[in-house]
Length: 252
Image 1 (cartoon, rainbow, N blue to C red):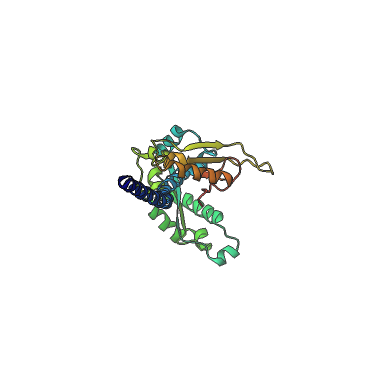
Image 2: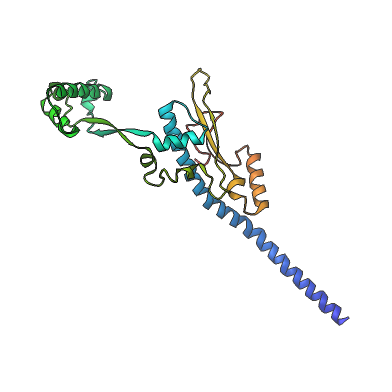
């Protein structure tokens, strides 16, 4: 009788301990899941923004988006990025007089042509110094010190400032914390607005399962179910192939 009572007390004690453990886990598991989720999503979002930069530049130069990673990576490795280097700006008085950026650039380009017919210059600095000092149209329009030059930069350096090179640029296609999975990439280059205007669209996605799949399964199921009930995409994505959204991310 005494032994059975001791066993009963021990069993009740063990049950109480287990109950306490389960209670603690029921509180800490969701908190830990959410903490890890936020940490990982910060990294995934950066990759999505990098991918967006690549697609936007591709669209800028080609007129469409691409769903081919091979095409996109080849573009990033080989295409130059053109940028306009600016020096000086138009004053309010010049703008009020009808002088615009395009008009000012045209005046400068015509002045450069005239100068090059008369002289040879070692570099652009020398050419600009000459027309600022000697060209009547440039001086008449107050464009001394005004300069616009289109230069070609290395695409990877211009977009990513040394974070990616030709050797590791493939990383922007991979979903962090996944089993080397690639972002789901989709384009709609034939979308037309109600006014009949063609607006190419793209979308890149990372479902929750791809970068949270190794975490608590029930918490992951709950997260996916919650987002679906809210009619949200269950994961992170940038852009939208069904409606123009200025290539925004669903975290923005």
